[in-house]
Length: 365
Image 1: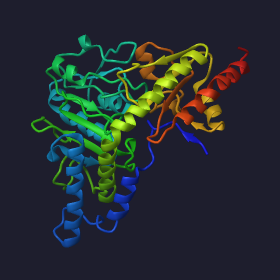
Image 2 (image 1 turned 90 degrees about the horizontal axis):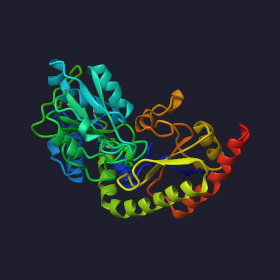
Image 3 (image 1 turned 180 degrees about the vertical axis):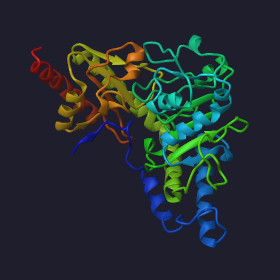
Image 4 (image 1 turned 30 degrees about the vertical axis):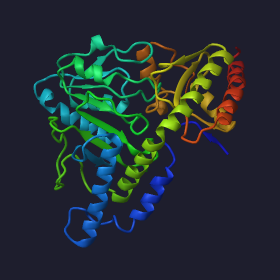
């Protein structure tokens, strides 16, 4: 059986999500905006999910909306809070290591402006503009795990701050300093197809897309009530257990960082060594093709990712690693599932040097 070391892409359903989803299937099918009994049942489940999500994230229930995906939450959140500045011709500023969803929204909405990062992937605060339609800064990088000082970015600019929290929501407490934030349930053990959009009370946000007849303009269409409830249940469970899980995963990733750096020649471990997501590490192996490394490790029973987490199918070098000025080829991202063990980590580290050696030998090195 394969060992899944690609939790940053997606995670299995948390048991709490599975239980909540099955329990809600018979009660959550109706339109929660109607007045009959079945609709009131669905509305109660939706309101419960909103309150549970708000409690887990330490925000207000009326600041929480559910979208169809995390990508939709990013697009609605960023463009909705930027509309006043875009109307005045201001740029959409974003760090150079943002997820492609943010980059595409920035190009679609107006004139993007990239903010530099240092070699660890952390934003250069001196490069944050004081004036912009919006400043987009992720809570943590999805490829290398580096945490961003969102609070400090908020203090550096007069523009509203949009935070892509998809990589960290549930795993870590949300930082301060943001006006609008986005998350994605399948990243924390909820079902795919549920995004979370957070709009702070008082934030100047407007729907950037065509509206429908829904009361909550931050959403579109019909919420999948059972899936939303499952997402909220899993978020609560993940938050309740994260101190123990994070401590264990932080130690396991420290093992990977140390063993890879000492046991694999010509390798660069990237990202912040401490101020990082607890479950993720990225390294690059010189003279090795990243896709070939993924396939060979998969043959040996280890599922990992390579290249940009969102654009690996294009075979283009990771824009995140390029912005950091580090090695972009032979890149591997390892991210632990919640039940990962020391035995799994050691087994991966045991086989990695042999795989890298074989791949280098194929090209005469």
